Length: 157
Image: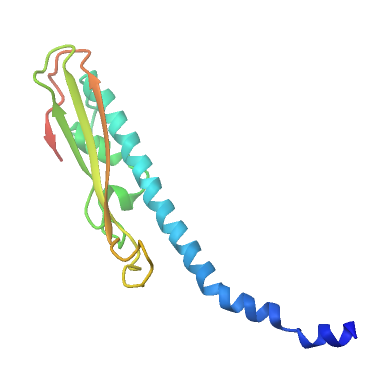
């Protein structure tokens, strides 16, 4: 009797797997896309911190031209640095915002910004995901000046 019952259910597991496979693949793609955006957010935060430290000590590395250009050149990937891809289409924006003055002890803020375009899943009728197209990724850091500002210029680049 038990052999006959097992024979009648053969292939059920493969059918169940075939039914769940599209959802599993969608979840994997969503996790990878979100992970990429999260990695870029970590990178922008790190770049802003490095830029704020250099601005606080009024140091522009040799050969870079400006602090903004140097910070952009330190991005981990060319996609984040230069844009031009499906996910990030514009170059990284780096801004140095001085505080009320350029004296020792005054704050200086560096912000690093880009726009991340998620995969086009917004057309799918998934609750909570129907309005996500792109996200502004923003990292900023503020430090107090340790020397009088002479080399680091404010502005975006």
